[in-house]
Length: 603
View (tube, helix red, strand yellow):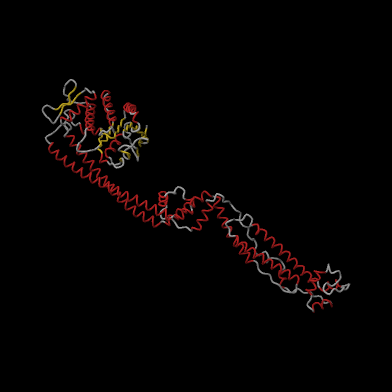
């Protein structure tokens, strides 16, 4: 795990970069070809608008120094005679006043920035507290639903995750909890299975369609005119005699079962004459009706009873059983009515209608089958139904918390607007500070032609072992200096490489110099520091970079460092020398594809 440093995150979103982030360490060495975005990274660090710093720190706590092409141009003007950077002009007094005024403005801007950052932190804490309170409200008010529908809460079993999920569903939608509960139990029941449908009564007119039922309402009597027949009709005993004969004729043994007297020899023939053929046919028809009615009843009972085998457990079978029992009782009574009619053919009879109770049974079967259908639909698509149930539950929760969600959004939006205003104000202050710093730096660069500066730069040259030239104060003009070559001749013109090397020496002097008026650590950025240098000078600059890297963070004014180069040899040498510092040294590769660059960590 790499140690964090002062700048903890850099967001690159200009030129060849698109929302590219990387987390730098104390030492950062970035290799990339020309055009891959090295200068963009240097400029982004200098502007400091999209940087994040370690906790409790801001850009105001640091001085960011960037060595680049612009630095060379700004500090080595009219290079042959070194005007500008190494000239102390007669305007110094006026420049000092301007400098003091600019520094005073910067101090005020820094104070305003510090206050804004403090206010921003306060608003941020309010936002955090608001969300914390919202979490508590959601968690508490949805307790019963969370517990009842626990299996829909996967991924949202902490207060913060629960609250964030509620916010995703907006104002939600209201559902019937009873319906949801039934749906939930089936969708998440691991033992749930598909059930067969109940078989209904296909023909509720099955009994009414029996042929000959009209005989029940008819008074069936014999039309015989024999003396015996006339006698039985007179005493209204036709049905009684007929019934007795059917019941006892076999076991009577030619003796009257009622008076125990011997029956006449021609009794059977006389009795047969009493009942004509039509009477016999109708009586036989009644017996057929009875048998057909009984058979149809049995055929009706079988599927109704089968419905109760492995029945749907969630069905309310009590109502179904009550209706079945009622149907059985009515059929039983009707069979008895038919039996009574057979025994007393002359007495008109009427059957109870069973259609209404069969309709009720079919209605109950329809209700049960609807529940079975819903169950089977859920079980056959259980994973999909679980997702649907999840959506229903969360929409219902969001609906119940609707007012709390609206209140949270209203307050949160106000705080967010306040934060956006403060952030914009902070960026504006930072831009003003950066602008003032540029102006101050420009004035300082014009006032650095002092003997102390020249001496420090010569010390650096001597320390590196460089012997190509040294800097000397101009003998006639104390506000200017000269470049003296190794043969003691005055350099009239300097090559581009010499200009860059001299600018680098001056940059190092700024990097190492401590400013007693500003207690700021320095963040150093070197953009292609050896570009355009000859091999000897490259070796010197490389050694200076290594020394600067070694001092970085070691109780030194330099606290963080970035080296960007397209020189592979320099990058390799830097990588070799940092092997023991990998806990705070990072190496990156800039890779460009389809005109978009990425910062890829190497190690």
